[in-house]
Amino acid sequence: MGRRSERLSKQGMLASDLTGEGDVIQVVSRAFDVLRCFESHEARLGNLEISSRCGLPRSTVSRLTHTLTRMGQLVYLPRDQKYRIGPSAVAMSTSMMRGLQLRNLIRSRLQDVAEQLPGTVGFVIPDRFNLVYLEVGRAANALGLSSTSGSRIAMVSTAAGHAYTAALDPEVGDALLAEMEREIPEGAKLLRPRLEANRRFLREHGYVVACGLWSPHINGLAVPLWSPQYQTFVVVTIGLLAAMYDEKRLHKEVAPKLLELSAAIGSMIDGADGELFSDRVERKPLPVANHKNKMIRTEDTNELEAGTRRPRPARSVRARDGRR
Image (tube, rainbow, N blue to C red; front, side, top):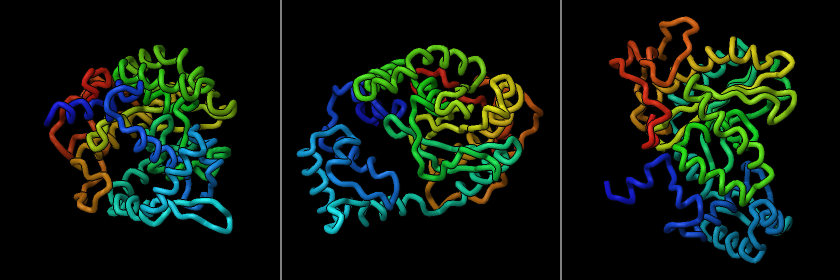
């Protein structure tokens, strides 16, 4: 692996990239900013709306949407004078989503926990200042929690985002926060005063709690996991009604279940050998926990791997090379 590949593998991003230095090609970065504005397949946006959402000049957006339309990533709708996601973007995403056996297993585990607590349990991946739900499990009576696969949530105002930023190598996390302060300063104010405390709590307990941050009616808890596929952290998170689960109850009743769930998902991800989206996943039984309500520390042996592979120590979120 060359020097640049080694640099890029560090938690999926470079600190210099986040601060606008290095060799980032701005036009490529801006093109993806435009595509991120389309949060659903049905979204229809004009250049002015896109400009407002991604903070780029309208003239720049006009050139980017024209190019993306020529490439098939966007489609122009003359009657509306707006754009929507194009066939090339759909085809590209669909090809990555085929072979859902492993994801079905993950969704099943999320749903089991969601019904036990009850709440909305998600498996999310980072996307710049947001996280995107890959899979969701939701109890029927989880009022006020309507996230679905593909939904985006803000890092700065969610337990998942606070857990993700706390798990990052400090220099990468600090660079990401600095970029947030430049582009979304009001949002960054929610994260900065909590970042160091989140890091300490994550090191000691393996999870992060955020109460009333996204909504005064919702409390959240999240566990970050290192993903070999993406070379960064993914997050298992849960949202619960604050009226039912205060912070004390989160620590006592919710944390053990989510840590157990996260260990099971982590074992499945590691066992997939980088094939989270492919159709070549072996048919394996789900890992079964052999402990009861044990607080899973990041330094502990991952007992959920028993029966699927030889036990090995779980990688710590404190590793400076970004791996767990």
